[in-house]
Length: 562
Image (tube, rainbow, N blue to C red; front, side):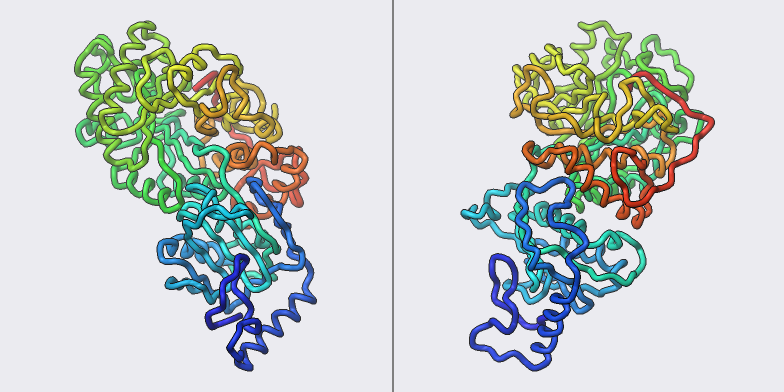
């Protein structure tokens, strides 16, 4: 590999023997000659440039330009992108066994892996400046790999693409003997929607911090950029609130099925938020109000209508609990909780829930929501809520998360006309707690069976009648956990459907093609196996090998809705 500076080109550093005015050292020439001879004799890279998930906007393969990563490789990065380069090195070191030192400083770069932050204007080839906050350009030549982006987020997404273009063994945790080839050519890529996410329900079953961090990694792998945490529900309150300590101490001590529950300290929550931010994932906390509040009422009976403490709830029914909308103490509670959670959350969103408050009269519900929205707005956060918030008055920036199963929803469409934007989470397409098939050992079927084909085969831009594409902020795949109790089960329900949703959120509509997607997705099975990720061996996908399926439990529970 070259060890001295090389002149930059659009596709990577110039080989040493092409530099003007310099006579390469004999050792440099020998290494260059050996590399080129090896490249001529080597088979093509085992992964094609177009095999990326989600599909890039534009792919220009060059089969004669494969790059091989070798033990003396280094990563050169502009200073503002150093953290991305460190993460790329962290991904590649275990399986390759290579040291992959990271250096920053003035570019041009002298290493075979180059990450460059640039604010250059868009050129005729569609590079950099027009790629926005998350786009990137990737160029692969025999001399090296270069990722160029205007932001660290764009570099990060480009680095995830490089990871996918290496052989599947790269996701292993121990060194293996492999030719670490990257297919030649260039990719220009940017997202279709700014919001691409998944939700993890930690209220029905509690998941420790390490499990949540692993879910963050799964999202980041497929360029999803939001993790919605459903933190409160009838079965458990999962976030410590200093001004109302019994919420976590008492309300956090239960879960579905009678398990021990649990809760996150504020330090735990900050750790999740920081870990996600490093991976360019924004945490969206949800405090579900006015319903789904039994755990809060157990902790503080004065918030309940009638002020009578309910018994702890460990079942899966919905719609029976609510805070007292006629008591001013309720709004002090909302302000305290929302204020503390907002202060812990650097992202712009705070989710109010708002669904299935069946016992609250419509006018009372609407008045409660309008007041709660104002409380959230006063913290500086943007209100997000399930689409049941639609009848309430609009506040600036409000986002509704639509989870219906019928694409004709006049009430939500009217809220959009009044200024609301939408996150689409159709229950019969992307609810990841739905079974894949009738014999899936865990999950529900109230919204139907959702195999990977069904999760992929819809268009967020045209799904809801009367809602223009420009009102769609993005997509989110929720995973409710009434029947999901372990990290392995979480992964089983996420994969392979999560990458399907990621492609709908990231890739241009013109690239959506089930036949092509299933072929690309098949190559990720060995990657998940190498990484120890449990997944469902969907018969829709031509997997190269069959994974293990979780065994049937005897304590399965089901629910009709949230």
